[in-house]
Image (spheres, rainbow over the protein chains, first blue to last red):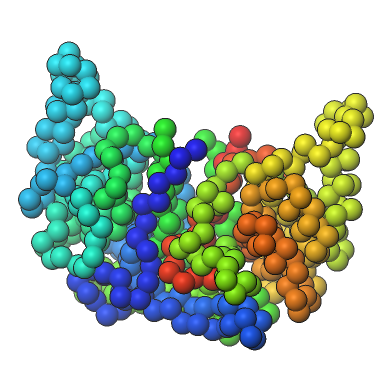
Length: 225
Length: 225
């Protein structure tokens, strides 16, 4: 079983969304071997590093973390590469990806009716936008627009992940988040996909069971199929 | 795919080891929908709730969390029930369990040479000691003694988990932890196994990739085989 770790390292000074103070990680040593054991306290934003969002993050009556269906965070997965995009990922990009894949994989024999099957119902869809690990927060990151989110919702995917620290950008109404959340599709952000080839995997990235939680750091992995 | 959540809920007031102040969980609201999104900061002990230990927890030169092999926290698993024990789990208990299972499962036909095969090499072994969820810290919890740890190390198991908040009790030299850690076997503590039947499952419980970390809260699940 070959496992790929697709999680950011959690450390003081790690990049956080918009460099916000309250999202910065703090590691507090609370015990040492001299007094028994090495122990620590972790002070971490609920959306710091690789993390999952609960619907409550953006929806007033949305599920909180302890209410989220754990099945959403484990299962069949497809990684799509948009690292050559300049600004955003739109519904057109998904169509392009699917068409190109069809051409490459099945030597132009794939029919239109088959195109849609590359992203499958219940897939966990991971969007790769960076060819290198995130070193510092870059406000011009590639995001998923509302049309792209609607496309994935129509596909009835199970969960959507991205390597950037947010799946949306400059959206005061948070339409990308809300489009997915309203269709019972959670979002994972801050993945480390730079070394991952596009293709199909098995994904695991389970959020901590935080009562009332709006989000949670996760350890995420891909298992090679 | 039937998934059982075997994680404690993380909330303020949750039971923590010896009721220590520095282990208590604190949930700090840092954002609300009025100012954009519901967000929070989690202040959590590295050994609070369901959690994994890095070898550095007890060994001066032991691996820290970001250095631990992620494969140790995912794989084939056996849950053994010791909830009728009074004080501790010893090597004798493992032998009893194995014999009883042999009797029940194979109608007295199992030979001695087969007995050992119930706990398999590379198993993640989960020790159930409580028939009810943990409500408050109880200092007389059932622990695994050094002989039991040595037995599991001889079996070359992959990882050992327990439902109590520590796998040892009253051991100033931490011999249960050290016996396992020195054999490259990590420990998971604080599992919620009260509703889980003994038997074989697939386990996932991945620690956060905390640089320099001695431990990490996890979300742990069993997948029914």
